[in-house]
Image (cartoon, rainbow, N blue to C red; front, side):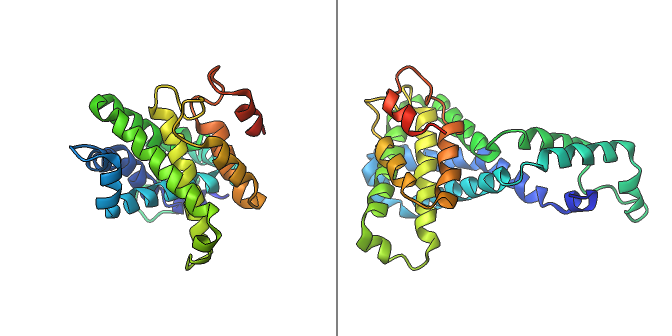
Length: 247
């Protein structure tokens, strides 16, 4: 990837989505789990918010899938940072007086961001964890909401008649991504995680369903569960679950 290619990468969009995850997602969760309504009532009566939350999860998983498919990106940014720091080649390509679209400071932040295996999932997980830390009274509602949504996703995917009604083939992949994202968030915010025997999430069922899918669909999502969750390697995780997710 050349310097000019790096320069035109839409970092503005990426940084906006990082900001969105860090600041808007907690507000969305506050509306979706707070107040006097039960999690089931929230999900039934606030379907627009549920849809928005699902779309965020899909974007996050898609972003990280693309990042995983571009392993050279870290080296590309290291090269770009060296060029920017020298101020030579990149400035020669710019009109007089115009600054590089991606300066040294932003390039450094980009490099740190892309150093993560799943950078956007990490941002979303941390934002969700911070929301729970700041709103301990909503912890139970948050975990119940996440687990209920994950159960709904699995039931949808396991119902051939319902899957046949999807207007686009990509819809089933969207639901798969959302289901995996919900498991990861649940694992981050629940004190015991998603993999313990008392978990409200059917991790075994979700993983087995994923393993039945074509590898191009399944592997990025299985890798997200392997490398982005918090409790997979905890002592409380049953051995059969760890074996099921062994790479």
